[in-house]
Each structure stands twice: as structure tokens, then as C-alpha cells.
Length: 494
Image (cartoon, rainbow, N blue to C red; front, side, top):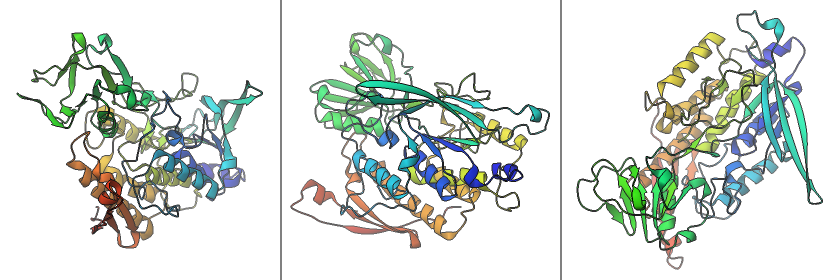
């Protein structure tokens, strides 16, 4: 039973629903837009600036954005369906963090969302409002109201004033991201390392590593990008990657001064590092940068929340969730953007469509609706213990999607009643561009040249195809522009 149907008897309409959105990053903005389009005026609570992780601050130790970052996905994917990029006269598809922030700002302005945001407002407590009269029912408090407390900070005349607020909402949608709580290292000996240890969230400029030997632990996007950028100034950079095979003998694979090495097995004395299980080479390094990811963090959900909820550091798993969107027992509490290894903006958009569809769904509708409590709880338990669709048994991968994100997109579209060809074509074009860009990256040396970023894409959604143009010569030597074109087509997905 949806919230709309439970409140229909009391003459409540969508416009009367009180909904809070926590966070004004990409997920929060698109959620607010879809709520607004459905007649709901949400309150967006933002502790800092609009844009979430894309709001860069120099030398910040608490934001994952750094000065030289460029997207590792083309901007044709980093867009909401109803608000494509364009109009800036640029041809490059891989853009800076500043350009993404500008896109989100333009989106918020175009969709008239700015006045919905209450800035400098940190949510401190979330609590389920119990209904004593429903405790004996079979499906108690399926759609309970939720109480929020937050602190608003206002600076005036060099003085900061903090005001505490509270409110009761029919639904709360959490869009606070998962790039803030640093995952702790479990590498033996790292606590005795004589040099400096950083997490990638603390990184901003490569210049401080001039002439040093640097170890980047983690071979995914951030590790590879940081290794590449730092290598222009450092003496040597070791990129420790679990996908790198153990070395039997000889030097590690290298490109320039970047060395691709197996997983870091131990930090030894005298700042030496042991890699893999068979590598005898133990180089000495000056700096270790942990590119090992983040934990989920919801400081406003705690023992006072009257809520069964778990997000244990180290597990990288949030539970109990139905379809990784709704709290399984209390679906008036929902989450957007928990999954990783996805194309974020369009993924958030479809998740928001699914969530909002259940808030406004009429009880007489024949469209998809949330199942009963028992089914939701059983599904959530299975998901939490399965370890995810690609890596069964490894609970840390519960929220990993990767190649299965397209099936998830189609599923969320179905939940929202968006089964038309237009949405499907958009999803399939996203997949085609993503797959093509992934193939360009696949065989590149980790931490080496990032020539996959020297391409631009043009979408052709009506045919589930795209055009891709090489900008190699333009970007390397602007005096010798040469554009090479090829066609790409989206494969069928079942």
C-alpha cells in the first residue's frame, strides 16, 4: 500500500505531502525535481554547498574532489534525461569537476530548485514516529511519518549562530552520498610506517610529492588517476592493484616511472613494502596514499531512531533495504545512490522516479506497487547476505552493480511506470557509450596515459547509437586537428 493510498481517505493529496530530501548533490537535485514535477514541494537539507561531491574546495581534507580531476565517464552519460549537456560550444566529452558543478547549478536553476534548498543545515537525528494504535496490526506502521532534527548555521558579522530545527515528514529521501567516511586500512604494519599516510580524500595537488617515491594502494579509477598525475612530479610511483598478478621474478611491469605491482601484503620496517605472496622486491617509499574507497555513513540514524538499520564500517553494506531503495519495513524512508560502479546521474534519476511513483500512486492504479512487508523483509535479508549479484558471498560487494546496472535501470523504470520505448532507448544508448568507453580504458596501463579521455561522443538515442570522434591530435597539438569518426551501436539487453 502506498503512502498516497493510505492518506487518500483523509483527503491528503500529493501537494499536501511533506517530504524532506537530505543532500543537494546530483541525487538530491534530481529527486527534488521529480517530486516537484509530481506536485510535491520538498525541503532539501544541505549541510554545505549545492553540488555534493562536485563542490570542490581547495585543500579540503573531507571531499573526494581534487584540483586536477576530470571525469572518467563522458558528459553524455553524466546528464539527466530531460537536461542534456550542450550550448557551451565545447567538443570534449570528459570534463572537469568545475564543469560538472556548473551543469548541476544550471539544472537547479532551470528546474527552479534553488529556493527549495536550506543551506548550512546538518541533519542530526532521524526518528520513526510510531503509531501506538497500529502496533497490533499485521503490517505495523508501513508508512510511518519521520521526525527530523537539524542544525542551521548562519554567519553574520563574523559570528556564527546555530539554530536547531525539527519537523515531521511523510517521507524522507536520503541522498547524502557515500564519499565521506574513509575506509580504514587493514594492511599489516601500516601503523608503523615511518613516512606519511594519506587517504585519497585528502589529495589535492601532486606537487608536494616532488622527487619522492609514492605508493598508491588501489587500482581502480582514483588510484590510477592519482598515480598518473603524481608521476609527473614524483621519482617513482607504485600502483598496488589486486588485479595485478604476483611477480615470480624480475622487475614489476612499468610505464615511465609508474610501476604496476600486486596487492600490498605488508608494510615492513624502514618504510619498505611487500607486494603479493611471491614478490621478493621490497621497495622503499616515502608516502602511502590509500585509494581504498569509503564506508557508508548516516550519522543521523542511531540508537534513538526507533529503526532497525545497519551500516557497519568495513562491511560496506546497508540493510535492510528493499531493492536497495526503500527501508524494507518502513518504505517512507528511502535511499538514492547507494550502489557503486554505475553511471550515476541517470541511475539516480530512475531511482528517484521509482521512489516518487510510490508516494503519489493512486490505490486504484494497476501499475507496479511495493509488495507486502513479509516479502520486502525476506528480499532485503537475501540481498544483504548474498554479497551482490556479481560476487556472491562477499558482503562488501552488496551494492556493486557494474554490468548489471542496465537491468537495474530497466527495473526501476518499470517500477515508475516508464516502460515506453523512449526511456528504454535512452538506457540502451547509455549502455552503448559506457561499453565503448570501457573498452577504450580496458587495455590501458594502470596509471599510464589516459588517451580514452581524448574522445567526444554524440548521442543518437532514437537509434540506440552514437558517434565518437577522436580528439587526440586536437588535445595534444592544437595546431594539427584531426577528427576520426566511427559508429557505435547498442547491443540488445535481455
